[in-house]
Length: 262
Ligand code: PEP
Ligand code: MN
Image (cartoon, rainbow, N blue to C red; front, side, top):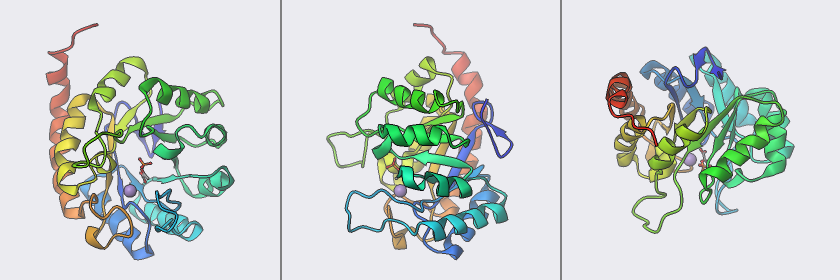
């Protein structure tokens, strides 16, 4: 069983929260302290940002990694951050407790091999057009390097309606739970792209059977340098955590009564 910061994934519901991008030392420290106080289990924050446009903000790199690490240590939270390039894997591993592979890199096989060898748990996001089997095969690239600590993350797939940024595939969460013992978490922030949809989709994701959530939280979402529409405030996060805890507590009873085999 993968254990991160004393939490056993699959047994303990696991919540990762923090800004889309690490922007300043103060921003990441203040977010870390507030998400910790609200009950988060890990801190996220991007230092290397894969962006659709080459002209967009791409993260502050090494400096952001050091602020993220400092914030995690101050708050008592393990840190999760993305590695986008084989050439950065060693640097990111020096700072991160969990290496994140973003959706755009789900099938970057040399990168999967590299993080498989890094000796850290890996969070593998589902590619935006990847089937469940392709996603699980990507996980195999990491597992087959001798790294058993892979966490899957559903973050929405490409749809046809721009009303939401992506389509949160909760059917895939329930289906993937039947195919693998790997823990699977859900990222409703990137799935919906809209802060007002994050709470309902988080609660729905819990009932779909996920092992945790990844939520983007920013002290001032409208001023964020990336993903400003989808980040929630620390206050909204606190309130959502209270509801998530209640649904997680109810889940065993509700799901046991409705379990059918194929
Ligand atoms: C992220 O979580 O920071 C991110 C870029 O997400 P995704 O790879 O799912 O787009
Ligand atoms: Mn983001």
